[in-house]
Image 1 (spheres, one colour):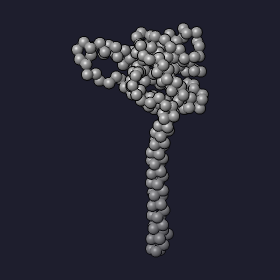
Image 2 (image 1 turned 90 degrees about the vertical axis):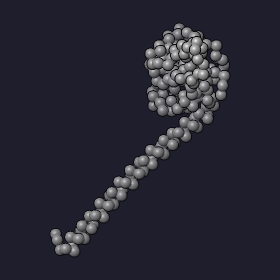
Image 3 (image 1 turned 45 degrees about the horizontal axis):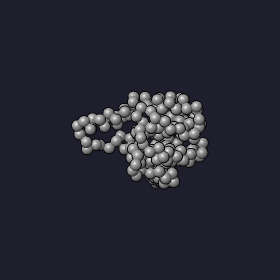
Image 4 (image 1 turned 60 degrees about the horizontal axis):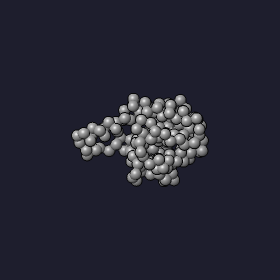
Length: 207
């Protein structure tokens, strides 16, 4: 799926602290020289932790000036265009390079909120996000990778999340089942050994 390179998604609490974030590392460029250096400067703004946190703080500060409305807000910020929304005690931001298609950015935003709503049973909030953090990160991985869009159908994303959850549960169940069988086998062996010792004792006339 082409048409937009996502610079980052930040899911923060009302104080601007991280709940879940993703800053895709752009694919390696075939450019060299001045062009490569220019792109490195442009793309390098959110690669390291310090610059990511700086951007997140700027997003929160800029968003807080927009009259505290609950609608999705679009705004520009230091070479980026961002969409932000306050949902209960959670802030969601989707960021792309300046000049990005805002309609497509809004579609990404709506996909994320739809999946989050399903993961939290319609109660998007800090506690619910933390309780479903594995699913939230799976959601981010399903939506985009290396900045490129992969999937915008909430139903498909949820199906893949559930499938991975089922696989993980199956693996865990298989492990637990193996442990149970091992324990049962050890118990049966101990009983059999005790019976043999008792029979030997009786046959030898011992106590």
